[in-house]
Amino acid sequence: MQTEPVVKAHQVMTPNPICCVPTDTAQHVAAILRDRRVGAVPVIQDHETRKLIGVVTDRDLCCAVVACNLEGKGILVRQVLTKNPVRCHIDDDVDVCIALIERYHVQRLPVVDEAGRCVGIISLSDLALKAHPQSVSKALVEVSKERSRRSSAA
Image (tube, helix red, strand yellow):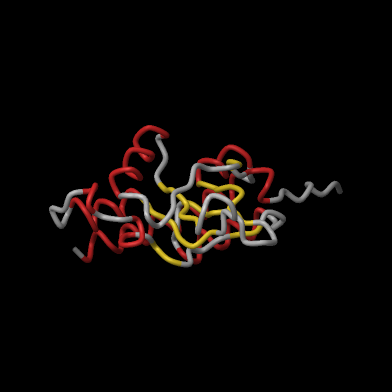
């Protein structure tokens, strides 16, 4: 019986994602989300070290800026970011990444190297295209359950 090769995070991630820093404006990040057609932007300490410190999602901006009727150009990323996001490591097995997505109900997972530098990001779409279909399907169901719980509580 032949076993399938182990798939690693670096094989499914989108490498070198565009990142922002805490002093960027919410308006700048919103433009990145729109122009790049992505749902999240990793937040790094600075562009030299690329040390991951947070993430800003389209939902973060909507809830923190739009819903409060604030102007995006007056709000800094540090005011809306999710600090210490769930992340995986570049050499993690993809099953570890999927387990993190399921456990924490996130749709995107920043990928860091041994120094904590943001080197990639894994989305459910990346997994759907490059990982085992049954595992991805289960992860999608788990993330959707959390979304369903949130909307029914409203």
